Length: 188
Image (cartoon, rainbow, N blue to C red; front, side):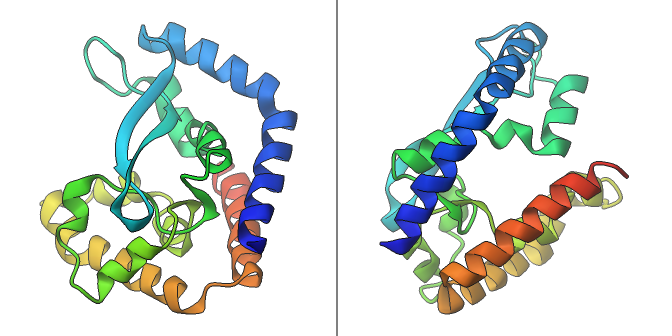
């Protein structure tokens, strides 16, 4: 209950203060990607329930290539702002395992499926560690194999740690680390 109240309070404050920026980002995205500026996709949430995740579009609607503006949005993580709406709707939390597509959950063992008892989050320990995953994968020859054998199991391990140790204090620590990473990693 405390986590839900915390999520609602922070996401409402966030939306109120960043709504002008949010509107500008959506307008630029709509122009840049020849679309409505939003990216919507079915993801798996708590207890395996499907929901529609909101993001700012980063790929061109016609040729499906990542735009320069989209690259900047992703690096700054500003494309994630619309997920504050998912939080208000109760589909997501500020902190929790990142929501994934359905087929990713098919890879989980019975023990690891416990993470599906959690609401997915905008940030997590895995999000912090793999903040720059796209850059990390540039130097990997077989990206799919590396994701399946190294990154995915590591993310699951961190999500299981969160499952067993979740608390409002841990959430606040993760949120503070996320803010620091977003601010300082983007200056590099």
